[in-house]
Figure 1 (cartoon, rainbow over the protein chains, first blue to last red):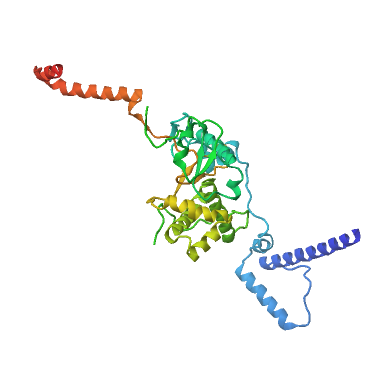
Figure 2: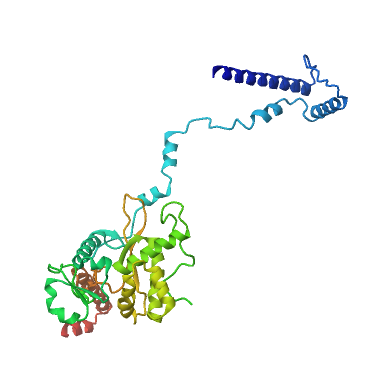
Length: 199
Length: 185
């Protein structure tokens, strides 16, 4: 394990050294300084060497003495801009509570009304939550009174729920499925809801 | 041909995440089938606003087709079989709901907003119900507010103010004819 690591590190160091050396050579060429200690790339191919020299000359002409471009090309893609200073607490808090949900909660509601039945406050376009809770409980009791037929074998006629007070109307609902509710009718669930009351 | 009796959106709602993340149009239809069956059975439903309003169209269309074609029509029965997952409800559709809504000129369903929970997720919930259901009503009873004490007092105060306005120009002129008339009556 250790041996392989050391070997890899050695390879990396070697590569880095060659890279630094090349940068130095390039830099010196660009600045027009004498290249001291430059290894001779003579491989016996004159055409290739001449090409290289011509390219270097072109670079020399175009980038007159700018050594940053080479370093930028290597490290420019790695190093990005970062925040220089810490954001203050004030600024952080203002940015934190700028969201939509906070504005919705903190805005003053002008559409709140009192329920006609119980007086709980709710928004104008909604139904009263307290009255609806009562309705839910009552409907659950009604469904339970009907039994399993409600869930699995629904009656094939209109269903009527008869409370203890409404025994006189039994004759009216002939041919309908009657469910007995063994308790008096709740006060808020009046029999005839369509007529307008006074006061 | 627009057969709906309530305002309808131009584009259908996608109902993303109807069966969790990654659910598409097939899951949407599956969810809507379940909701339509629940509505026909329970006659009142509590769900998210978008789900309620989307099921409303499908349920209403089903009832309208059933009214128009009756139970001896192949396509209608096919549709009823598709949308009602529990088959005892097919009988309910043709024997209970069709006679109930035969002479309706309005929509067969109602939608009500439920209040949002605070603090909560902020989701708008609603209630979808069939009209003419046997459950206790959700909307409070309508009252005549004319005879409430505050309203009576305000109305009398208004009348008094009006009478004073009528009388005042005559008093300035010195003619008490109108006042005398009022006293006589």
